[in-house]
Length: 328
Image 1 (cartoon, helix red, strand yellow):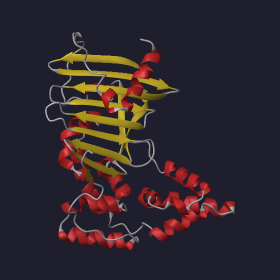
Image 2: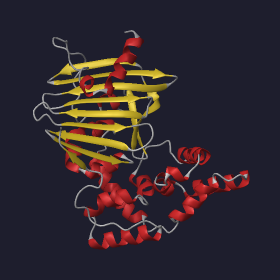
Image 3: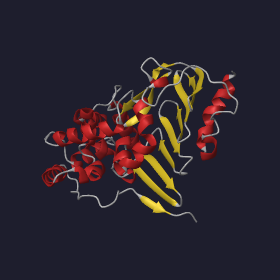
Image 4: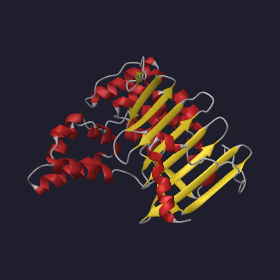
């Protein structure tokens, strides 16, 4: 296969129409053996590619990939995968089809991801998009109704509408995470974040904002002190930094802040404990899980948020980031 053509295939994920155009061709002969939805398949630790979940975002493990194309078609399940790489950074296009569900997953340069699920029977379509930087977006269309959810991590998106998320993406994430499920991870992280909030080490929002302002100091010594302090506080300050208004920062401060965030990014898979450290000061996440908390837990959560300078929360009536619209 000519690799120029393979790269072109990778690029096709940018439109809804082309997402499912890479599926089974009539008359294709089945190859290899069928993998069931419970198997990791191509995504095992020794498979074609390996995924990691880092700070709640999915990415390819760059050192562990094999370039090329594979496909299989057996027992009503069709799969195909194409992996390319540029300077050691992999990209991937994957298709999974059954009579009840069509899935496509495309990843560019290890971090930028688009996952799309379509149900031929109901016509429902869900699209999850993760840019290299910034918020993730999940759109879910059912007939004339369009729901949109946004969040800093995949856990935010699942907590916005757990039933719909699991219906469309649950099986896929179980394979990508090699047996771990988002449902299990969210439940364990919720328990861990309740324990993490008892920590007194987290600084207040104003202290963090003051350090970020010092990143723009004319004195190099003050910039170094501020950067070292932010790094010392660690992952719990990440949501607070990300919520600072970009309008209040100059270009130099923004660049140094991005450097801090990059240095705070680990190179190993998330655990409920590491996710709890990341999310303990994320008010949006606390809002999303508020309905799972008892009255006592909610009171303690609000005490923690107020202690670090954030507003208290109330049980959700509807997801904060949900937007319902109808087609024109």
